[in-house]
Structure formats: structure tokens, C-alpha cells
Amino acid sequence: MAFGQQSGPPASAKQVQELLALLKDAGHTDFRDARGPMGFTQRQAAGKFTRDEAAAFIDRLQDAEFNGSTPVTAPAWRLSAQEQMMRQMPAEQLAVELRRRGWTVTEP
Image (cartoon, rainbow, N blue to C red; front, side, top):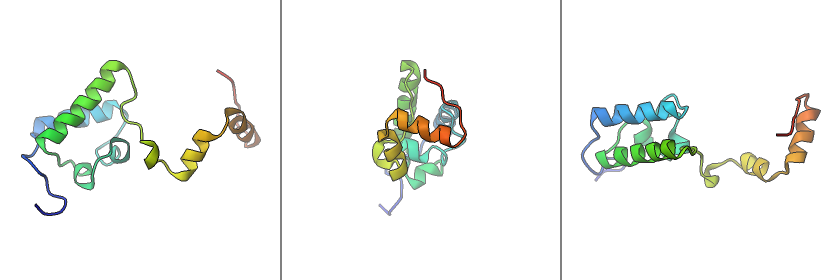
């Protein structure tokens, strides 16, 4: 099998359309937009999936939708260094910096 080639029968047009609809419901515009959060390969970001891959992603999105959880968050290892730093910073420090920049900050 050549590099980047599918390892199985291609997904049906119906599967690809269903997957795209679920991604749009999750707030993405297309496959490329969802590449990082969903962990798509370059081939998948172009809309090319095997039947098994499409079924797995559809199940993942439907399960997350059913459970009310956020389906497509970037894994921590894919976050930039700045994003990782921001997640570790105490909320008080973030609020102080936002106020310094002219933002209004309220507590929940």
C-alpha cells in the first residue's frame, strides 16, 4: 500500500455527507477545519475516508451529541505551547491581564 492510501473500501457518499453534517453541527465548516480537533489525517481532511473510518467518526460524534459532551476538542498534546500555558495559568492572573488590556471580566 502506498503512503497516504486508504486501507479498505471507500466510504459511501451518504457516509461522507452524514459525517460532514455532524461536523457542521459541531461548529466546523468542513473537513479541513475539523482536522486538528478530530485528529484527521491529511487524506481525511480532503474528505477521503474508508467505510470503517467514516463509521468510527460518525459514531464518535453521535455519542458525544447524545451524551451532551463536547465532541471535538483538541487533545492536550496538539495544543500550542501558548495554549498549554494559558490552561495552567490561574484564573485570577488571566482576569488581571484581560483587565489590563481593557476587557471587562466578571466572575461566574
